[in-house]
Length: 161
Ligand SMILES: [Zn+2]
Ligand SMILES: [Zn+2]
Image (cartoon, rainbow, N blue to C red; front, top):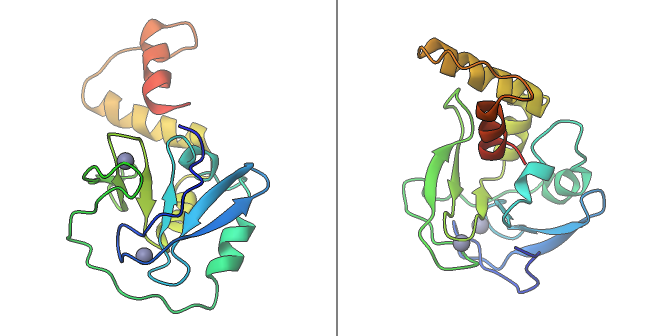
């Protein structure tokens, strides 16, 4: 989905979100600057921001030294782009950080400190994948993941770009 240009309301606190242009990724992010500090990512945007080498200075600059309102984590959130119910999912196999995802349009919503935590969990996508493979291996899955293996391709299409 293309970068949405309409102003959306925060799925966590309802405040109007502010568009922050991210020059490295060449897209806008919707940030809840005047409410809870959450960030909404359009479909496919999130993967441009979840690794440590990816530049998020504008986000850090925008969110720093601000007090954000508390939000109810237990409430089901409604996707501000398509109106679908968002679903809480763990961001990784460590099951530490829960993010809201919209299965209808692919949007994701992160509370204000979650992006930093996710980036700290895995410095690179390679390490994220390796960790997932370890878990698959521990569950008795003996598939070999090399570049030319069909299972590897499926894996990549599911979990990577
Ligand atoms: Zn908010
Ligand atoms: Zn949606």
